[in-house]
Length: 442
Image (cartoon, rainbow, N blue to C red; front, side, top):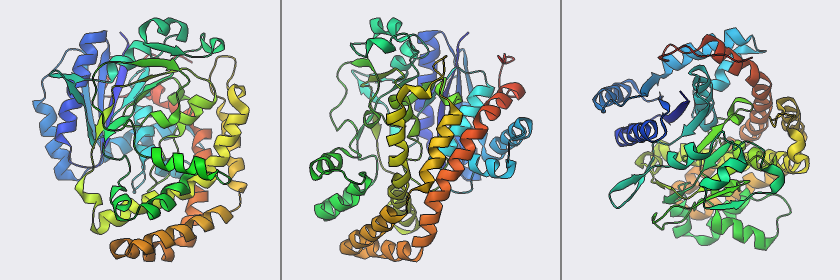
Protein backbone atom coordinates (compact mmCIF):
# COMPACT_ATOMS: atom_id res chain seq x y z
CA UNK A 1 0.00 0.00 0.00
CA UNK A 2 1.24 3.48 -0.88
CA UNK A 3 2.38 5.40 2.20
CA UNK A 4 2.35 9.15 2.62
CA UNK A 5 3.34 11.56 5.38
CA UNK A 6 0.93 14.39 6.17
CA UNK A 7 2.78 16.66 8.57
CA UNK A 8 2.05 19.56 10.90
CA UNK A 9 5.05 21.19 12.60
CA UNK A 10 4.04 23.42 15.52
CA UNK A 11 5.40 25.27 18.53
CA UNK A 12 2.06 26.58 19.82
CA UNK A 13 -1.35 25.42 20.97
CA UNK A 14 -3.27 24.50 17.82
CA UNK A 15 -6.02 22.03 18.68
CA UNK A 16 -8.27 23.15 15.84
CA UNK A 17 -5.50 22.64 13.28
CA UNK A 18 -4.71 19.17 14.62
CA UNK A 19 -8.36 18.14 14.48
CA UNK A 20 -8.70 19.46 10.93
CA UNK A 21 -5.56 17.77 9.61
CA UNK A 22 -6.72 14.49 11.18
CA UNK A 23 -9.87 14.83 9.09
CA UNK A 24 -7.72 15.42 5.99
CA UNK A 25 -5.71 12.29 6.79
CA UNK A 26 -8.90 10.20 7.06
CA UNK A 27 -10.16 11.68 3.80
CA UNK A 28 -6.91 10.82 2.01
CA UNK A 29 -6.90 7.23 3.26
CA UNK A 30 -10.50 6.67 2.20
CA UNK A 31 -10.43 8.56 -1.08
CA UNK A 32 -7.11 7.22 -2.39
CA UNK A 33 -6.59 3.94 -0.54
CA UNK A 34 -3.28 5.06 0.94
CA UNK A 35 -1.73 4.56 4.35
CA UNK A 36 -1.35 7.98 5.97
CA UNK A 37 1.17 8.76 8.66
CA UNK A 38 -0.08 11.93 10.31
CA UNK A 39 3.14 13.38 11.72
CA UNK A 40 2.80 16.13 14.31
CA UNK A 41 6.18 17.59 15.24
CA UNK A 42 5.49 19.37 18.50
CA UNK A 43 8.00 21.90 19.85
CA UNK A 44 5.47 23.41 22.27
CA UNK A 45 5.92 23.62 26.03
CA UNK A 46 5.14 20.56 28.13
CA UNK A 47 1.61 21.62 29.04
CA UNK A 48 0.69 22.27 25.41
CA UNK A 49 2.23 18.98 24.27
CA UNK A 50 0.14 17.19 26.90
CA UNK A 51 -3.01 19.00 25.78
CA UNK A 52 -2.31 18.03 22.17
CA UNK A 53 -1.75 14.43 23.23
CA UNK A 54 -5.15 14.39 24.97
CA UNK A 55 -6.83 15.91 21.92
CA UNK A 56 -5.24 13.37 19.58
CA UNK A 57 -6.52 10.56 21.78
CA UNK A 58 -10.05 11.90 21.24
CA UNK A 59 -9.84 12.26 17.45
CA UNK A 60 -11.91 9.62 15.64
CA UNK A 61 -9.78 6.66 14.59
CA UNK A 62 -9.67 5.99 10.87
CA UNK A 63 -8.54 2.91 8.94
CA UNK A 64 -5.03 3.24 7.51
CA UNK A 65 -4.28 6.44 9.44
CA UNK A 66 -1.45 6.32 11.98
CA UNK A 67 -0.92 9.40 14.15
CA UNK A 68 2.69 10.03 15.16
CA UNK A 69 2.93 12.84 17.74
CA UNK A 70 6.52 13.63 18.70
CA UNK A 71 7.78 16.14 21.23
CA UNK A 72 11.30 17.51 20.86
CA UNK A 73 12.83 14.82 23.05
CA UNK A 74 11.49 12.09 20.78
CA UNK A 75 12.61 13.99 17.69
CA UNK A 76 16.08 14.44 19.14
CA UNK A 77 16.37 10.75 19.97
CA UNK A 78 15.48 9.84 16.38
CA UNK A 79 17.94 12.36 14.94
CA UNK A 80 20.76 11.17 17.21
CA UNK A 81 20.33 7.62 15.91
CA UNK A 82 20.17 8.79 12.30
CA UNK A 83 23.25 10.99 12.59
CA UNK A 84 25.27 8.23 14.23
CA UNK A 85 24.25 5.77 11.55
CA UNK A 86 24.98 8.22 8.72
CA UNK A 87 28.52 8.91 9.98
CA UNK A 88 28.40 12.44 8.58
CA UNK A 89 31.10 15.06 8.99
CA UNK A 90 30.64 17.45 11.95
CA UNK A 91 27.82 15.46 13.55
CA UNK A 92 27.33 17.94 16.43
CA UNK A 93 26.69 20.77 13.99
CA UNK A 94 24.39 18.62 11.86
CA UNK A 95 22.38 17.81 15.01
CA UNK A 96 22.09 21.52 15.78
CA UNK A 97 21.02 22.33 12.22
CA UNK A 98 18.35 19.65 12.33
CA UNK A 99 16.94 20.61 15.74
CA UNK A 100 18.14 24.07 16.79
CA UNK A 101 17.18 25.84 19.98
CA UNK A 102 15.67 28.74 18.03
CA UNK A 103 12.81 28.80 15.53
CA UNK A 104 13.74 27.40 12.11
CA UNK A 105 11.07 26.86 9.47
CA UNK A 106 13.45 24.87 7.29
CA UNK A 107 14.72 22.63 10.09
CA UNK A 108 11.26 21.56 11.26
CA UNK A 109 10.34 20.55 7.73
CA UNK A 110 13.67 18.77 7.24
CA UNK A 111 12.85 16.67 10.30
CA UNK A 112 9.52 15.78 8.70
CA UNK A 113 11.37 14.77 5.52
CA UNK A 114 13.69 12.41 7.40
CA UNK A 115 10.97 10.90 9.58
CA UNK A 116 8.78 10.45 6.50
CA UNK A 117 11.64 8.53 4.88
CA UNK A 118 12.05 6.39 7.99
CA UNK A 119 8.33 5.59 7.87
CA UNK A 120 8.62 4.49 4.24
CA UNK A 121 6.51 7.36 2.91
CA UNK A 122 6.93 8.31 -0.73
CA UNK A 123 5.65 11.85 -0.33
CA UNK A 124 5.47 14.53 2.36
CA UNK A 125 2.52 16.93 2.58
CA UNK A 126 2.99 19.99 4.81
CA UNK A 127 0.43 22.13 6.61
CA UNK A 128 0.81 24.91 9.22
CA UNK A 129 -0.75 25.54 12.60
CA UNK A 130 -1.77 29.14 11.84
CA UNK A 131 -4.09 28.21 8.98
CA UNK A 132 -7.35 26.40 8.30
CA UNK A 133 -9.14 24.80 5.35
CA UNK A 134 -11.83 26.39 3.21
CA UNK A 135 -15.36 25.01 3.09
CA UNK A 136 -17.69 24.82 0.09
CA UNK A 137 -21.35 23.90 0.54
CA UNK A 138 -20.59 22.35 3.90
CA UNK A 139 -17.72 20.18 2.62
CA UNK A 140 -14.11 20.86 3.63
CA UNK A 141 -11.83 21.59 0.68
CA UNK A 142 -8.76 19.42 1.28
CA UNK A 143 -5.63 20.18 -0.81
CA UNK A 144 -4.55 16.55 -0.62
CA UNK A 145 -7.19 15.74 -3.26
CA UNK A 146 -4.98 17.31 -5.93
CA UNK A 147 -1.70 16.25 -4.36
CA UNK A 148 -2.39 12.53 -4.35
CA UNK A 149 -3.96 12.61 -7.80
CA UNK A 150 -0.67 13.76 -9.35
CA UNK A 151 2.43 13.23 -7.19
CA UNK A 152 4.84 10.53 -8.27
CA UNK A 153 3.23 10.00 -11.68
CA UNK A 154 4.65 10.81 -15.10
CA UNK A 155 3.55 14.23 -16.21
CA UNK A 156 2.03 12.76 -19.38
CA UNK A 157 -0.25 10.59 -17.23
CA UNK A 158 -1.30 13.52 -15.06
CA UNK A 159 -2.50 15.55 -18.05
CA UNK A 160 -5.87 13.79 -17.87
CA UNK A 161 -6.53 14.69 -14.22
CA UNK A 162 -5.82 18.42 -14.34
CA UNK A 163 -7.86 21.30 -15.72
CA UNK A 164 -5.06 22.71 -17.85
CA UNK A 165 -1.66 21.71 -19.20
CA UNK A 166 0.99 24.40 -19.47
CA UNK A 167 4.07 22.18 -19.57
CA UNK A 168 6.72 22.09 -22.26
CA UNK A 169 6.46 18.81 -24.17
CA UNK A 170 10.09 17.96 -23.39
CA UNK A 171 9.18 17.61 -19.71
CA UNK A 172 6.22 15.25 -20.06
CA UNK A 173 8.28 12.12 -19.38
CA UNK A 174 9.42 13.52 -16.04
CA UNK A 175 7.81 12.71 -12.72
CA UNK A 176 5.54 15.21 -10.98
CA UNK A 177 7.53 16.05 -7.86
CA UNK A 178 5.48 18.84 -6.34
CA UNK A 179 1.85 19.87 -5.92
CA UNK A 180 0.71 22.94 -4.10
CA UNK A 181 -1.40 26.03 -3.85
CA UNK A 182 -1.32 29.26 -1.90
CA UNK A 183 -3.45 30.85 0.81
CA UNK A 184 -6.25 33.36 1.15
CA UNK A 185 -6.90 35.74 4.00
CA UNK A 186 -4.35 37.77 5.93
CA UNK A 187 -0.88 38.52 4.56
CA UNK A 188 1.50 35.59 4.97
CA UNK A 189 3.93 37.93 6.71
CA UNK A 190 2.41 40.06 9.46
CA UNK A 191 3.25 43.51 8.06
CA UNK A 192 -0.28 44.77 7.41
CA UNK A 193 0.07 47.26 10.28
CA UNK A 194 3.08 48.84 8.59
CA UNK A 195 1.17 49.15 5.31
CA UNK A 196 -1.66 50.94 7.13
CA UNK A 197 0.65 53.24 9.10
CA UNK A 198 2.81 54.37 6.18
CA UNK A 199 2.51 52.92 2.64
CA UNK A 200 5.80 54.58 1.72
CA UNK A 201 7.67 52.80 4.48
CA UNK A 202 5.91 49.56 3.53
CA UNK A 203 7.21 49.95 -0.02
CA UNK A 204 10.75 50.72 1.15
CA UNK A 205 10.69 47.72 3.48
CA UNK A 206 9.20 45.08 1.18
CA UNK A 207 11.21 46.21 -1.84
CA UNK A 208 14.33 45.07 0.04
CA UNK A 209 13.28 41.61 -1.18
CA UNK A 210 14.24 42.64 -4.75
CA UNK A 211 17.57 41.78 -6.29
CA UNK A 212 20.11 44.50 -7.02
CA UNK A 213 19.39 46.12 -10.37
CA UNK A 214 15.62 45.46 -10.28
CA UNK A 215 13.74 48.19 -12.14
CA UNK A 216 11.36 50.52 -10.31
CA UNK A 217 8.42 49.05 -12.20
CA UNK A 218 9.38 45.50 -11.24
CA UNK A 219 9.86 46.58 -7.62
CA UNK A 220 6.38 48.06 -7.56
CA UNK A 221 4.94 44.83 -8.92
CA UNK A 222 6.91 42.78 -6.40
CA UNK A 223 5.67 44.89 -3.49
CA UNK A 224 2.08 44.72 -4.74
CA UNK A 225 2.20 40.90 -4.94
CA UNK A 226 4.36 40.14 -1.91
CA UNK A 227 2.81 38.17 0.93
CA UNK A 228 -0.70 38.40 -0.59
CA UNK A 229 -1.00 34.77 -1.72
CA UNK A 230 -4.15 34.19 -3.75
CA UNK A 231 -5.94 37.22 -2.34
CA UNK A 232 -9.19 36.96 -0.42
CA UNK A 233 -11.70 35.41 -2.83
CA UNK A 234 -13.21 32.19 -1.45
CA UNK A 235 -13.01 28.82 -3.19
CA UNK A 236 -15.88 28.14 -5.62
CA UNK A 237 -14.62 25.41 -8.01
CA UNK A 238 -11.51 23.36 -8.70
CA UNK A 239 -8.87 24.38 -11.16
CA UNK A 240 -5.46 22.74 -11.53
CA UNK A 241 -2.56 23.23 -13.91
CA UNK A 242 0.24 20.83 -14.85
CA UNK A 243 3.24 23.09 -15.26
CA UNK A 244 6.65 24.13 -14.02
CA UNK A 245 5.24 25.89 -10.99
CA UNK A 246 5.99 29.56 -10.30
CA UNK A 247 7.42 29.69 -6.74
CA UNK A 248 5.45 32.88 -6.05
CA UNK A 249 2.18 30.96 -6.44
CA UNK A 250 2.75 28.36 -3.70
CA UNK A 251 2.93 28.70 0.05
CA UNK A 252 4.67 26.25 2.36
CA UNK A 253 1.50 25.81 4.41
CA UNK A 254 -0.03 24.12 1.37
CA UNK A 255 2.57 22.05 -0.44
CA UNK A 256 3.68 18.48 -1.04
CA UNK A 257 6.83 16.86 -2.43
CA UNK A 258 7.66 13.52 -3.99
CA UNK A 259 11.28 12.33 -4.23
CA UNK A 260 12.98 15.70 -4.43
CA UNK A 261 12.79 16.20 -0.65
CA UNK A 262 15.03 13.15 -0.26
CA UNK A 263 17.58 14.67 -2.63
CA UNK A 264 17.88 18.18 -1.19
CA UNK A 265 17.02 19.58 2.26
CA UNK A 266 15.68 23.03 3.05
CA UNK A 267 17.93 25.80 4.40
CA UNK A 268 18.06 25.36 8.19
CA UNK A 269 18.55 29.05 9.07
CA UNK A 270 17.17 30.11 12.44
CA UNK A 271 14.91 33.09 13.04
CA UNK A 272 14.50 33.71 9.31
CA UNK A 273 11.14 33.97 7.58
CA UNK A 274 11.10 32.25 4.19
CA UNK A 275 13.97 29.88 4.94
CA UNK A 276 11.76 26.95 3.95
CA UNK A 277 10.92 28.02 0.37
CA UNK A 278 14.08 26.94 -1.44
CA UNK A 279 12.74 23.72 -2.95
CA UNK A 280 10.03 25.68 -4.77
CA UNK A 281 12.75 27.58 -6.65
CA UNK A 282 14.87 24.49 -7.24
CA UNK A 283 11.96 22.50 -8.70
CA UNK A 284 11.07 25.42 -10.97
CA UNK A 285 14.58 26.17 -12.24
CA UNK A 286 15.42 22.54 -12.99
CA UNK A 287 12.23 22.06 -15.02
CA UNK A 288 10.69 19.43 -12.78
CA UNK A 289 6.91 19.18 -13.28
CA UNK A 290 4.40 20.16 -10.65
CA UNK A 291 0.70 20.76 -10.25
CA UNK A 292 -0.59 24.16 -9.20
CA UNK A 293 -4.14 24.01 -7.87
CA UNK A 294 -6.54 26.43 -6.19
CA UNK A 295 -7.52 24.71 -2.95
CA UNK A 296 -5.96 27.57 -1.04
CA UNK A 297 -5.65 27.40 2.73
CA UNK A 298 -6.92 30.24 4.93
CA UNK A 299 -4.08 32.11 6.68
CA UNK A 300 -4.50 33.95 9.96
CA UNK A 301 -2.16 35.68 12.40
CA UNK A 302 -1.61 34.59 15.98
CA UNK A 303 -1.55 37.14 18.77
CA UNK A 304 1.95 36.56 20.16
CA UNK A 305 3.69 38.35 17.26
CA UNK A 306 1.86 41.65 17.84
CA UNK A 307 3.66 43.09 20.87
CA UNK A 308 6.48 42.66 23.38
CA UNK A 309 9.09 39.98 22.87
CA UNK A 310 6.96 38.28 20.21
CA UNK A 311 6.94 41.46 18.13
CA UNK A 312 10.71 41.88 18.33
CA UNK A 313 11.31 38.21 17.49
CA UNK A 314 8.97 38.32 14.51
CA UNK A 315 10.51 41.42 12.97
CA UNK A 316 13.99 40.01 13.52
CA UNK A 317 12.93 37.04 11.40
CA UNK A 318 11.73 39.43 8.73
CA UNK A 319 14.98 41.41 8.79
CA UNK A 320 17.02 38.21 8.51
CA UNK A 321 14.90 37.19 5.54
CA UNK A 322 15.90 40.37 3.71
CA UNK A 323 19.56 39.77 4.58
CA UNK A 324 19.38 36.18 3.36
CA UNK A 325 18.29 37.38 -0.08
CA UNK A 326 21.77 38.74 -0.82
CA UNK A 327 22.87 35.12 -1.10
CA UNK A 328 19.71 33.55 -2.45
CA UNK A 329 19.46 35.97 -5.35
CA UNK A 330 22.96 34.88 -6.36
CA UNK A 331 22.00 31.19 -5.92
CA UNK A 332 18.75 31.59 -7.87
CA UNK A 333 20.63 33.29 -10.67
CA UNK A 334 23.03 30.35 -10.90
CA UNK A 335 20.13 27.86 -10.77
CA UNK A 336 18.37 29.65 -13.62
CA UNK A 337 21.56 29.54 -15.69
CA UNK A 338 22.21 25.85 -14.97
CA UNK A 339 18.61 24.75 -15.45
CA UNK A 340 18.11 21.02 -15.83
CA UNK A 341 21.85 20.42 -16.16
CA UNK A 342 21.61 20.10 -12.36
CA UNK A 343 19.71 16.84 -12.90
CA UNK A 344 21.31 13.46 -13.45
CA UNK A 345 20.20 10.83 -15.95
CA UNK A 346 17.38 9.75 -13.63
CA UNK A 347 16.05 13.31 -13.26
CA UNK A 348 17.38 13.58 -9.71
CA UNK A 349 19.07 16.72 -8.45
CA UNK A 350 22.86 16.55 -8.21
CA UNK A 351 23.37 17.49 -4.56
CA UNK A 352 27.12 17.88 -5.03
CA UNK A 353 26.72 20.45 -7.79
CA UNK A 354 24.04 22.27 -5.82
CA UNK A 355 26.25 22.43 -2.73
CA UNK A 356 28.95 24.04 -4.86
CA UNK A 357 26.48 26.66 -6.11
CA UNK A 358 25.42 27.43 -2.55
CA UNK A 359 29.01 27.69 -1.28
CA UNK A 360 30.03 29.93 -4.16
CA UNK A 361 27.39 32.46 -3.13
CA UNK A 362 29.16 33.08 0.18
CA UNK A 363 31.83 35.01 -1.71
CA UNK A 364 29.31 37.75 -2.50
CA UNK A 365 30.24 41.09 -0.93
CA UNK A 366 28.39 42.27 2.19
CA UNK A 367 27.84 45.67 0.59
CA UNK A 368 24.23 45.05 -0.39
CA UNK A 369 23.39 43.78 3.08
CA UNK A 370 25.01 46.76 4.79
CA UNK A 371 22.73 48.94 2.64
CA UNK A 372 19.74 46.77 3.58
CA UNK A 373 20.45 47.24 7.28
CA UNK A 374 20.68 51.00 6.81
CA UNK A 375 17.38 51.01 4.93
CA UNK A 376 15.71 48.88 7.61
CA UNK A 377 16.93 51.29 10.27
CA UNK A 378 15.48 54.30 8.44
CA UNK A 379 12.15 52.59 7.82
CA UNK A 380 11.57 51.36 11.36
CA UNK A 381 12.63 54.69 12.91
CA UNK A 382 10.26 56.55 10.62
CA UNK A 383 7.37 54.46 11.98
CA UNK A 384 8.29 55.34 15.58
CA UNK A 385 7.03 53.72 18.75
CA UNK A 386 7.64 49.98 19.06
CA UNK A 387 9.12 49.98 15.55
CA UNK A 388 11.80 52.47 16.58
CA UNK A 389 12.55 50.23 19.53
CA UNK A 390 13.14 47.39 17.10
CA UNK A 391 15.49 49.65 15.10
CA UNK A 392 17.57 50.12 18.26
CA UNK A 393 17.86 46.35 18.66
CA UNK A 394 18.74 45.93 14.98
CA UNK A 395 21.46 48.57 15.21
CA UNK A 396 23.02 46.89 18.24
CA UNK A 397 23.13 43.52 16.46
CA UNK A 398 23.98 44.64 12.92
CA UNK A 399 27.44 43.10 12.60
CA UNK A 400 26.25 39.89 14.21
CA UNK A 401 23.34 39.62 11.78
CA UNK A 402 25.60 40.13 8.78
CA UNK A 403 27.83 37.29 9.99
CA UNK A 404 24.85 35.06 10.73
CA UNK A 405 23.42 35.55 7.24
CA UNK A 406 26.66 34.34 5.65
CA UNK A 407 27.08 31.47 8.12
CA UNK A 408 23.52 30.30 7.44
CA UNK A 409 24.47 29.73 3.80
CA UNK A 410 27.69 27.92 4.74
CA UNK A 411 25.68 25.68 7.06
CA UNK A 412 23.18 24.98 4.32
CA UNK A 413 25.92 23.75 1.98
CA UNK A 414 27.15 21.44 4.73
CA UNK A 415 23.65 20.03 5.25
CA UNK A 416 23.25 19.43 1.51
CA UNK A 417 26.48 17.40 1.60
CA UNK A 418 25.15 15.33 4.50
CA UNK A 419 21.61 14.88 3.23
CA UNK A 420 21.93 11.68 1.19
CA UNK A 421 23.62 9.78 4.06
CA UNK A 422 21.00 11.11 6.49
CA UNK A 423 18.12 9.98 4.28
CA UNK A 424 19.65 6.53 3.77
CA UNK A 425 20.31 6.21 7.49
CA UNK A 426 16.72 7.12 8.30
CA UNK A 427 15.51 4.40 5.94
CA UNK A 428 17.97 1.92 7.38
CA UNK A 429 16.98 2.36 11.01
CA UNK A 430 13.30 2.85 10.20
CA UNK A 431 10.91 4.29 12.77
CA UNK A 432 9.40 2.68 15.87
CA UNK A 433 6.09 4.36 15.05
CA UNK A 434 5.65 2.43 11.79
CA UNK A 435 3.08 -0.38 11.78
CA UNK A 436 5.02 -2.37 9.21
CA UNK A 437 8.68 -2.91 8.29
CA UNK A 438 10.11 -0.35 5.91
CA UNK A 439 11.67 -1.71 2.73
CA UNK A 440 14.99 -0.03 2.00
CA UNK A 441 16.00 0.23 -1.66
CA UNK A 442 19.67 0.93 -2.28
